[in-house]
Amino acid sequence: MDLIEAIEAKDVEMIRRRLSTYIIANPNDEAMISRALSMIDRGNVPVWDSVDYFERKEKKDWNREYLTDAYAYLKTEHYSKALLLHITELARYLSPAPASRSAQGQANDRPRQDYTKETRMRELQKELIELENMNRRKGFNKQEKRRFDEIRTELKRFESNKHHTNSSTFMELLMELYQMVKRIVSGSERR
Image 1 (tube, one colour):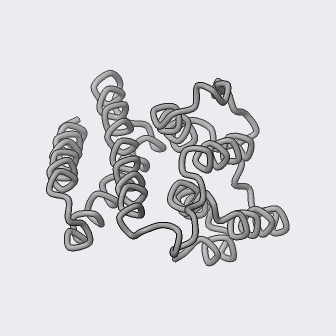
Image 2 (cartoon, one colour):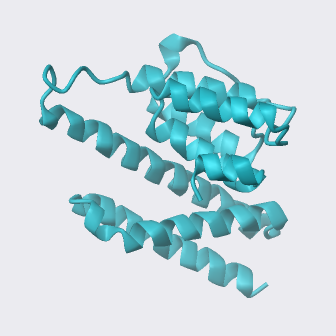
């Protein structure tokens, strides 16, 4: 199910996952992002949390770590429209729209592709560490368990799509994350 199908089905969890992933992977696709937000508003889909306590930084302090923090907050704390739009602006700032194909060689495309994968892996790693700490302290609540399962599903998807990457470092990181997830699952099943 893609983003538009999720909106049409009014599947809030799927909309949140697809929209969050889309804005990180395609922050410069303003037409699609606007279309999705309009469809959500028109359909009265209850996607947005009304609260958002994420502390915004000035533009001069924007970097990939800040983007990762904002994205992790959106995914784990409060899914607010204001924060989603802030993350979209932040991602655009950090990944400006590429120049035309004739003005830019394919070699320049590679870092952008790696950035998206690396960013996603850092986000997953950070979330796993946070979830692992929560699990150790108090165990999972329903929402944390669901998010943990989402991460595990995403890692399995990455594992099944090994052939889509040429980076052995990326695969090593992915396997390390997968092992962490397995340890968390086995620890929570013993409770």
